[in-house]
Image (tube, rainbow, N blue to C red; front, side):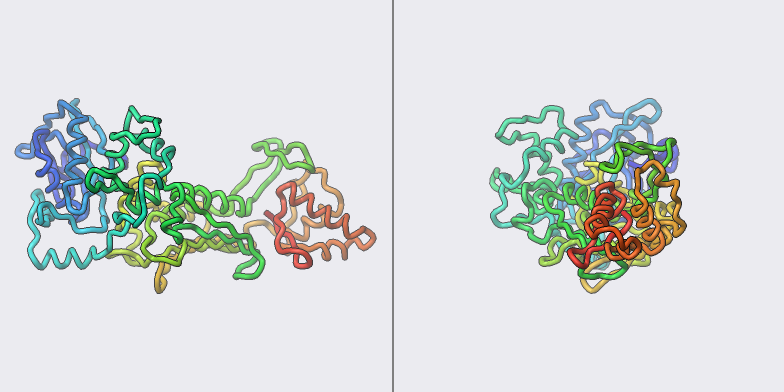
Length: 479
């Protein structure tokens, strides 16, 4: 939840984005207010304030109020999956703060009636306003569907229990599913209930599945690292599979492992071991790209892609001067490249909410503004946002050849037992960006081919170089 001044929020009074509700408000009345806010621009509900005179009454039973608020969201059609309401204090009295996110992907009804927020009140939408809303939010709700053959056995119990412990104090570790955990997943939109039998939704499979790719083969992330600024036959490739949290972690690890690092070695910085050249040395590292920005781009791609598109995966392509992240599915709803920083729209609200609960996503904002800020603070250009024929691409542009200085600083390697040939190889790499066995052999013609190969291989083992290509096409770049 974003940090704000609760007293100032309360002083503003009820509005199009702020509603007060008393503890006695019925589930249906709360559902009406939630759906009205969701159909407008989202907002906040403070539960425990008398809406007739704005008097702070407080709540006698916080947990009961929280359950009724979550139940109210589920009474909407389609079910409105809300962030877990937070307990706050105002004038010494406990209130419940319920956030209705902006940018939701559907038009929400209650008993067939569509509402909107009009100033301080909820108002029924007229035919024209309803048509406009439905046209604006005409996205399919694929994440809520149940795939043929999907059962509870497709879910990983360990992942489910770890998530359930964020909300429940008593999570059974027995083989049989306990009702509390099943009800939690149902209320979060990860399960459906058919004739008292629970089945996982697409969102549930993606978030907690043992092997989601069995039913959703394209739900994976392809990771490629090229040796230059264009696609070539020389590359490193991995595929991140499993649940969405696993894919996010694997993609981040791949990018960090293949990202260049600026390093200065001295006794004043963090300790790292490079074997076999040395047992230990000290160096300070600066990643080529700001890690928070890279993480946000990956999380956004995973959270907001269109999983209904088959045959296309998220693709993360890493070049020497940029990182490109392509996500299947054009921008949803009213979002455009021009307004993407200011506007919000979640194609997969259940996935976004569960990733938020799990700490991957800051729900309010979705990270675009943070990506811009992190890139600027890192001294890099603004990201490039592009909509393609059937998808969306984010490009993080790096410093290219300027990231590592062309001037060789031998003090950087003073704690390493480098021989003359290895020092010469590093000088070439800092000037040209690459070196092959033949290049080093031409400088030292009296040394055997095997010795040259071993010199460069030792630098790879030490974590200083990255080997590219194979056999006669082998060459090395600075890691």
